[in-house]
Length: 496
Image: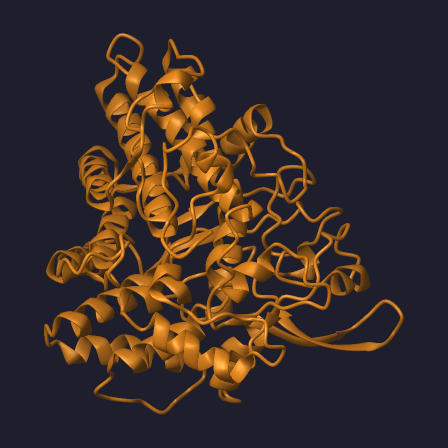
């Protein structure tokens, strides 16, 4: 699927490489963008919808990883857009990452709505092909709306193609109503999608990916509501999540990689751990830039790793660094402890280098080709353990087993028993550093306020950060959406 998707990217979303690269049209200006008349055109349209995911890793990093206690992203200049995210600033409605997240997801939703509205047996006569296309479109629509709910809480429920004028009358729907569409779409996708793809279609969403997404939706809904309209609903659907996780683990074609580094190896893509990922090719214009957004400019210059991206330090937190033991191989693999700059001077800057392989560098920061793992098998195992612990379902041996496997794979030979939710969260933090999962893990389990505020008290040497509060579980609606039409959307509580 890599070549197919890149063709779609080239024809649809060639954009500039600035901070505003995701700042596309607001949903009020999105209308029908044409329809398709034969199977090949629909295939291109589907691939165009996948291409909307191109910058997914970037925004996940800036809105989730930077937000968590894994990073202390405070620079000397104080002007980088990720700093107010890090600092829990309540006046960040103009932040480019927020408008990017909103607009990119609604661009994807528009594309899949257009596909679904025009897909029928006249234009795609083959029933198997048509069902598969419908399944892919519904999987992606659910994926986009799930991102929006986790980020903003209530959002406009755009479930068909509207004209720009019509969207001006669509307010924000309740989180519950948006989840209803998400769950319905994924349930349809599970029945419509094949269990696997091969050849040029490798990397498309499968029925297993849809089951994994649905399980994560149930797990998220089951999480703490914090008294706000955010992603958690205290719904106690842990049993539904566990059943899906069990199915994937017991019946799916997935397994652990025995070598932690092999999961992220450029020559081992689509390995046994990967349930759903975003595919990239090595291209100076439309490849991936996410491997380099975590590192300072000086490191890129010193290693001749493409032109720099204008970023200051995005420093890994001392708390995360200290959480690793000396035997843990995930530390050295994921984190770079300083570097020698182009002038031969050592720079004491500690940052993520998890996705970097300098032997695969290109001529620009977009020329990385590593696929981005969105859902991998270890996460399925650990989310099942979370659901077991949060529900009190017993099965302690299943919980202990996944934690001890990941510890052993990381070089820690001492087994532990009676793992509790705090033990699990600690292990998952070490396992998934730089994979933008820590924030969601803390939110789901009701830990985020206490953990973040305790961390701020120790880590915030420069006294830049505000206290974490329940309203900050989600972000503000982007200001450019608030101003589209007076009183169309209200702002989320706690934000200016």
